[in-house]
Amino acid sequence: MQKTDAAVKATAQAWIDENLSELSAWHQHIWHLGEPAWREHESAAWYVELLRSRGFTVEAASGGMPTAFCAEWSNGDGPTLLTYAEYDAVPGNCQAAGTRAAPREGLPADAPGHTDPHSALGISTLAGLLAAQHAMREHGIPGTLRYTGEPAEKMHGSKVVHGLQGYYDSADAIVSFHPFYMLPLCNTARWDTQCGAYYSKVYEFICDEPETWQLSANPNSPIPASHSAARAPGANIALLQMHSASRTMQDAMLPSVGGWSLSDAILASGQATADNLPARVSRIQYSWRTPDIEMAEHVLAVLDRNAQHAAQMAHCRVEETWVARSRPGLTNHALAEVLFRNLEQVGAPAYGDEAVEAAQDIQRQLGIAPMAKPYLDECEQLISPQDAEAALRSEMPAWQRNWTSDDYVEMTHYAPTVRFYVSRPALKPAPGRGAYPAWVMNALGGIPAAIDPTIEVAGKTIAGTFLELLLDGESLGRAQEEFEQRKAEAGLEPLLPADFTPPTDLPWPEYVYDSAGSRRWLSAGSRG
Image (cartoon, rainbow, N blue to C red):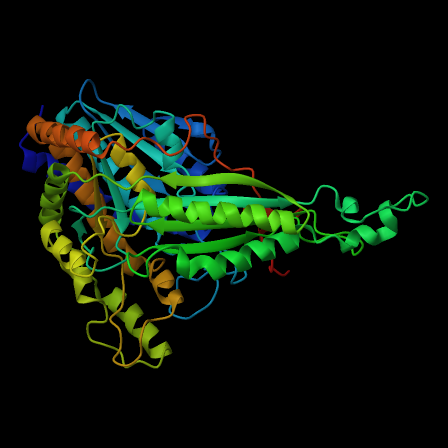
């Protein structure tokens, strides 16, 4: 039998309090796996096994993605509420959960590590999910909980696929969480300014017939042109031409304002070859973030032209593979109000003595006088969505509607969605010292005393929001009405075809196990 709203939420919060040590251990497991995009095999398998043990029906490899999943649990007819896990780590960020710059034991520094950290994102939402499930059982609350596993978030890889294949269609509301990464969005929910467009594409240069580069070939040689085919420019030259031309054009692509960015990554396979042959294949990935689709399309046109010309110059052909193509997000004030109300009821994270001591030790290692309160004040404070919006807009051009990018935006086109942030541990800058090195935040994301408060607050906030939406049909109705209106006004259709296939077969970096069963990092530059 249902009790009051406060009593139901108290049941969920008590579940999280009672299970904090287990949640912390779960986080440590995912954090130390540190698997990169599209290769999160052990992380995804762990989630699938745990969810099945908790009564969820789980589809592994959902959407044709080997490291994705979709889990569902129902307590009878009622609304369907969705949240999700992410668990991909980032190459080149292998950091131990300590107070000194050092890779995790047994791994090189160029192996992946959790930077955002997505490990805490996933365990936070899992905490909220399981706490809501517990309260629903205890109080007889009907409804369905859906939980998706979203690999390759750093490439915006999976949510567009899950969306195209209908995994979000029947959701009545979606809660999207991320540990805070940029002020003023710390311990708050997004209001009007959502994330913008994101495109990512791989250009593959292929030199199929290097022997035809020459005017003629020696018919008496069993080897085409007696090794003279090595003088064909080949795939590496095409890649270099593409990289050089695009870097040269970068400043001219879009205005110098608006918060857009363009980055590139060279996929390492296929470039080592015999000394008498040119490179047969090379691959470069471009990813760009823009406030709107028009700007994203302009960058795309420039890159496509550069790729065609680079291929022609180097006696190659070019193949193009989309990684992601996301629309700007739709806001939902009704859901933002419900979620922030629940965040207020929980309160901001607080850092205890052990977390403070770890932060002070990091400061000592960097030659900074330890601070009595080493964490950013904002990490332990709430800011309303409206106040955060005002602070955010004060730093943006008036014409700019969206800011940064994240693939939760695709979800906002399928169901009412709220995006919220809870602080992750971040240190106050020392006067005259500038930013801390990247390893500091990576390390703090793995130190339990520092990161566990994020998991606790985010988990309780998600559980409370879910339970309020299940109990209060009017709030959910307002969110759905607003969603339909904003979706109609935006009129944005998916940017990729319905049969889009995620590029999981490209040579993304990954861990492998050798014949002795030892785990090794496989990437260009790794040694030993």
